[in-house]
Image (cartoon, rainbow, N blue to C red; front, side, top):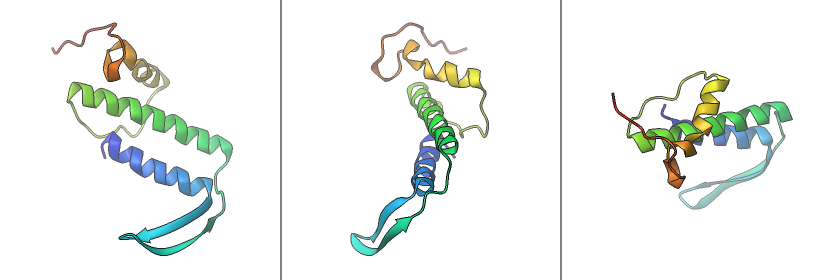
Amino acid sequence: MNPAEAITVLRLHQRLRRGGHFRLTVEGASAGSGTLPASSSQEDLEAVERLLLYLSDLEAVQRHCEAYFPAPLTYSGSERIELSNRQDLGIDGYPRGLTLVSL
């Protein structure tokens, strides 16, 4: 699954875990509604949020480089920091600080 797809799935997961009111529609017609109880701790929700940030940064870098690959199953803290500094690479309209070079 590429990062953009993973973001979509993870956001749905996040919404379901937070709980709250929902309304289900199928082809524009109401198919039901209800309330889900919260089923995650604040710590779990924060972990999901960190993963969403990582995936968003990875997706931006892939789009910029036009190099697409599945999202990794794990990542290190240093990888997260490197991706979060994408503004140094001139990605998404940030000032350029470094130049990407193909080897």
